[in-house]
Image 1 (cartoon, rainbow, N blue to C red):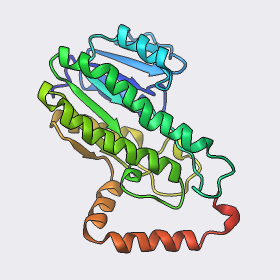
Image 2 (cartoon, rainbow, N blue to C red; image 1 turned 135 degrees about the horizontal axis):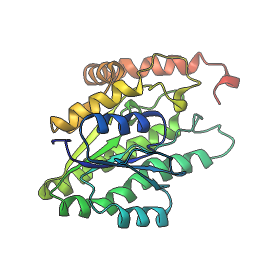
Image 3 (cartoon, helix red, strand yellow; image 1 turned 30 degrees about the horizontal axis):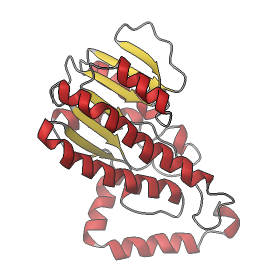
Image 4 (tube, rainbow, N blue to C red; image 1 turned 30 degrees about the vertical axis):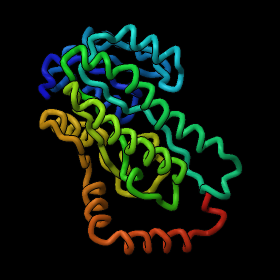
Length: 246
């Protein structure tokens, strides 16, 4: 899809990967970018249109739908992550929060904007997933479950929306150098690099974007020897001290 003169809505566009995506779309020639966030950003750039948008809030989604009738690219970037074990976390509130945002919030946005994209010629939906949508790691299992669900959602809407000419793109990445991964000690990719690969994927009409080296390597390993991969995850968990598992 040609991004020049496109009209884009980026959820969670006020920081991290979302902020990098907003700039990347502008650099690629987008005519307008709606920047969705719980607290609207302040800007003097006439190409940017801040909107109040919590994707778990029905009223916010409805208001955005009414205000953004010219959207041709929906960028589902907003997400949360709760690092906690499935069985021993003090509460399961994190599981509900991750699912409400990463799955139900994304579903709400897709249901709201799919007809608009169809009316505007088809367009593109991009869902930010994760390598966590392929596997469950020793940390962030609530997050993994929600991203598994979001991957299933992405595959399903791709089938439903193909006839109206809407490209549905899944983006996978490992740790991105944003606030969400600030406490994690592991190799990270800059949000600008991930954003650049997403722009390239949209231009090339890709249904899947492996946005960093981690996603490329993990997909290759899971395709060749998933048993070995999960053996390593088990070893990592077994070697973690109980007090460090939450």
